[in-house]
Image (tube, rainbow, N blue to C red):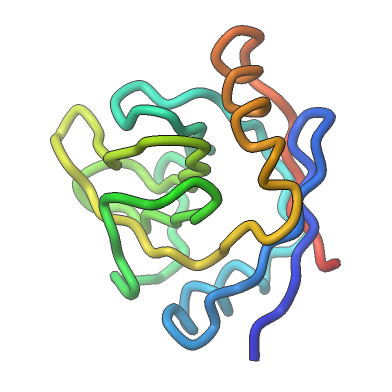
Length: 138
């Protein structure tokens, strides 16, 4: 059963639904680590998106419900491999990529409230730099 998470990114609040049926292992691994705090920055290669670089962090996951073309608000977790582990937070047109080329990440969260602020947080990351982000149970 899907769960709701509150995401606070910079001054903006969002509510996201877990994609439990399509990505159960990714959802479980992420939910175990709540509350999850980090910094979100603008992407380098993927288009209109922000990301949370996680380096060599290992969630112990493979690929499930993976996509390279998330819609705005479809949050991906890339479990690592060809590039570093990361969370992708798309706010517009996006093709998930790194310096290694095109990637696919696990679509595990979908923003269902606050979508009107997606472009604002993306542009804030682009023009003002890293912002605090917190994922917590709603």
